[in-house]
Image 1 (cartoon, helix red, strand yellow):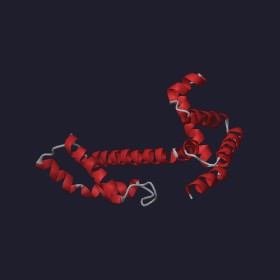
Image 2: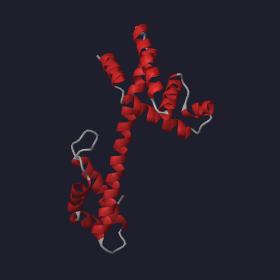
Image 3: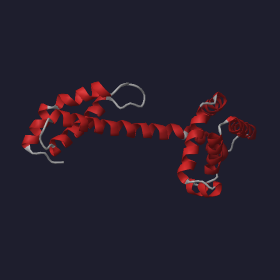
Length: 182
C-alpha cells in the first residue's frame, strides 16, 4: 500500500489511536495465546494506514478506530485458530503415536479401554466424534467419513471438534498422555 504525503501525515498524527484501541478493546494481554502488545500495535498500524488510504472525509478518528479494531480482531482470531488447531490435535496425536509406534501392547490396550469408556460416557455428538477420530486414524478424511456415516462433512468436523474437547476433559486420558510424554 502506497500512501501519499498527506495520508502519511494523517497516520503520524493519529498513531496514538492504535494504542487507545488496544487499551480499550483488548483484554488479557500477556496471557498465553494472546499476541504481544507490539504485535497488536503493528497490526493496528496496518488498520490505521488502510483508514488513511480509504478515508472519504468525515470524522477520521471514528473511521480509523473501527478499521484498527477490525485488523486487531482478525489477528486475534487468527491466533486463536492456530492455538485451537495445535491443542485440538494433542489427544488424537497420542492415539496415533500409540498405534504407529512399537509400544507395549498393554499400554495400547489401556488406551483403547480409556477411549471406549470415554465413548460410552460421552454425549451422542462426542461419541460420534470419537468414532470419526478413530476413522481418521485409519486414514479416512472427513468427506469419506461423512459418506460412511450418512452425514455432511461439516457435521463430521463438528463431531470431531466436540470429541477433542470432551477427550481433553477426561483426567485419566490426560494422565495417560502425560505418562507417555515422560
